[in-house]
Image (cartoon, rainbow, N blue to C red):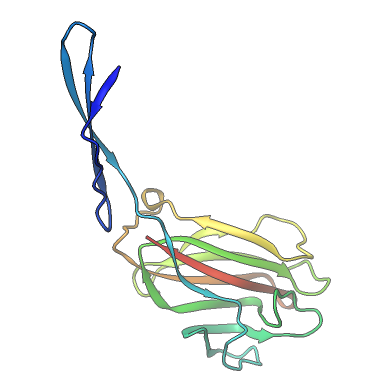
Length: 201
């Protein structure tokens, strides 16, 4: 039976370990003090989000830089689209095709979760999509998600929680993120991405 605790748990601003103390008795006056150390992770917070509504113009597939909600994106074989066949939450989304990418040029320390929505453009179905991260400024890229086979006629939500141990990365690393458009080269592979959110520790 737990008959006494220290009554207070002090949680630091960016907690890693919390100490809990309990005093246990066996009913005969024998008391044992047990100290627990519990690892606590601070909740992830949104470091960046965009729906591409507040962005600079990018109307061609040629390589170029677009700024969306204050962050620069490099778009290769990709543009900011709002045609009738673009799948969007608001008015705009990224439209990309193979062999292209949409790359966030800013770096985010302690990236924990990547969230976004995607769909095939119009009635197409040949496009493929993957998500990659880099922790060395874009020199090397690690695939963290690959689109399951299928046709995505409607926007589909994807939530990627990064496994640091499996990926061989650290919370102190500076993360870049890119979406890679694959499949046969050309317009048959057009796809949309929208509602991007990045969460950090």
